[in-house]
Image (cartoon, rainbow, N blue to C red):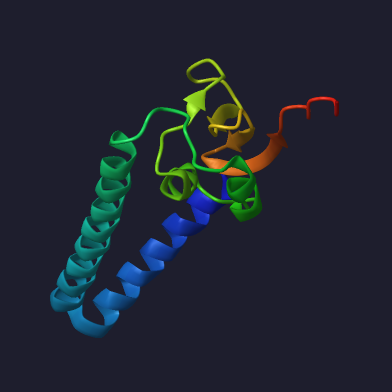
Length: 134
């Protein structure tokens, strides 16, 4: 477990204790309904991103340069998939760390991104060499 998971668990327990103290069972029920609403909104977002990605080729992006300019350290794989509207071509073995994905554009430029714990840590843009001037 990483520190983020521990803090989330402690926060959830504190929120549950506060809900119990303020409203008893009714407070717990209200908290539960709020958590269910949050989970449904997240699932809806996930399904929307996956529906859009299902209609595009794996590893395709309209412009690798534009994708490179929009990437930021800490973005989730879901966020990057939403940006590209395509699933990345996985270059690393399944279960390997870091996870490496590539998105290519029609001009043979591509962005290779590394994800650790589901978050973007590094990426690089590679463009084809310009042909020599005649």
